[in-house]
Amino acid sequence: MSNQALQARKTKVIARGQGNMYPVYVERALNGEIWDVEGKRYIDFGSGIAVCNTGHSHPKVVAAVKAQLDKFSHTCVMVNPYEVAVELAEKLTAIAPGDSEKKAIFVSTGAEAVENCVKIARAHTGRRGVIAFNGGFHGRTNLAMALTGKITPYKNLFGPFPGDIFHAPFPIEMHDITVKQSLKAIENLFKVDIAPSDVAAIIVEPVQGEGGFYAAPAEFLQALRKLCDEHGIMLIADEIQTGFGRTGKMFSFEHSGVEADIMTMAKGIAGGFPIAAVVGKSEIMDAPLPGGLGGTYGGSPTACAAALTVLDIIEEENLVERANQLGDIFNERLSALQAQHPQLISDVRNQGAMIAIELMIDGDVEQPNVALTQALIAGAAEHGLVLLACGFYSNVLRFLPALTISDELANEGIDQFVTLFNSVA
Ligand SMILES: Cc1ncc(COP(=O)(O)O)c(C=O)c1O
Image (cartoon, rainbow, N blue to C red; front, side, top):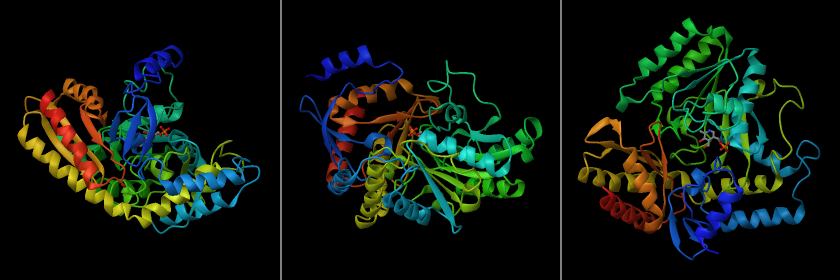
């Protein structure tokens, strides 16, 4: 079966809303590489959108999941629980940033984790309002979508949205939005739209993911912590894309030394098995009544077994430090490309292995080069690469290699990208 034939079958039966970036159908994948049904091999700089931090089909994850399947696959953690879930909660509460005693709950997706953070914050504070940021991405379910700070393609056609959600600008220095302006905008919300005493939570990604890989300055997260403490507001860290070693720390909030009240974990948690978690301060997490949180598949035993193994691999293979090494390799080589194309590449940035380049027109950082971004994505498959775009203005290319990828494979992929860039530009 060819890629083209499969894409034709897919288009007939899977709605266009669930689109695919590449008409490349996977036959198998291992560590940092994917092979399609036609036998072509790709270097994967997407890792299933920051999910396979430990690479595709890590042999230890595969073995752990097989061993769990031989015991049982599902009982529902809310009916008959099991040790792997308890052990995973013990480990996640121990590695979550900050010294406070913590508890966890398990769900199946990132969006669900976000929704549950808001439920818990509302239950704990008895308040209604939530503040999120322009360009933020928190998922596609109704509440998570309302928190998301970008209309197309996430929100158009899908109203009405839940109320009591407000957006403030996210600080991005290269686009002239300062930390001071962002904080002032929140103060302004308190004057114009909602009293701080009615605000349950502020939710923030420490590095905006879909929004364009902009890292929140440490002083901004510290100022949010102070503001939340002043007004009794819960600070929610959305670490879904930034977690599990990706940014050169286990969690990105560690770069600022700030402890959130509640945080999300998903994506890199289990090497591709669908599990997500909310972890927060114990007294806050215990606010909802028994039965108020959870779901049929939350904390599935196979996913818990995978997640426990992923945590072991991150430690054994030193993947947090590896994220920094990979970030340095990409940054150096992409900066050299920027020096060759100063009118097109406005920025090369990374926090660990969350790496991006931003593209502009005619040397003007305020003119997003969407056409070039799209052309690079379109040409990537031909060059044997999986690349992802992102950005509030859809003009950012992001690189999310497996943290287990070798220097050789990373450099081979970057060589391909440089060739592609030079041919398209
Ligand atoms: C920061 C962030 N929050 C939430 C989500 C939603 O996660 P999911 O797609 O698993 O629902 C994502 C997914 O990209 C994300 O990056």
